[in-house]
Length: 218
Image (tube, rainbow, N blue to C red; front, side, top):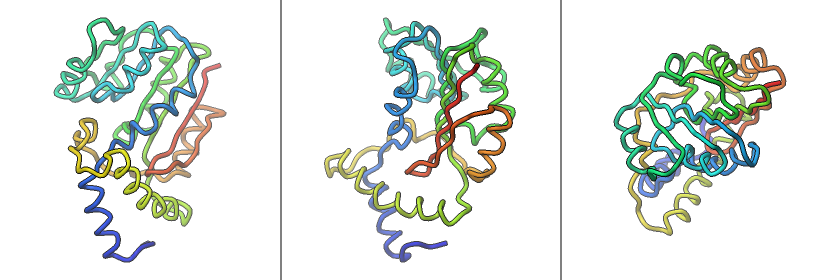
């Protein structure tokens, strides 16, 4: 479904390529608003260059970040002050989570690379009683509402990139350089599967081709 003329879309894509910004980092402050002011242990799955893990460390006693890419894990370690209560490790999200339970688990733009139901089940097992899981994910556009929201995000994406970069061309953000693949689950499918594994989970479509999921362990 095309909501804009092809030439307009091409021009916007060229503009976005010249003024990139991190769509995932855009939601980091929102993630913090879903969490307690203070907690003991946090896990960031797919931690990338470590921006979110370092933010979590402003509230947590210890934070573990895991990512399957050894290069970006090395970069995260370089960017993290030695005194910060954060560790990063190269690990698979389904088999390599450090032992123990966590008061907070975050997963941003990663779960569409994993078996969705298995991943949520695994995260649930590692969440402490009263703990909070926050997922920012990608969904495949399917409904008219999906396409309308995606269409509205295109010019807003360009405007945000312009203001964030103050009109200058900018290098591509580090956390956006890892290999990606398109999402294959629609939002309605995601909602059904998520609420089967996590009863009462709150899910919402978001701008910039994202959705959010928040769930608290009882």
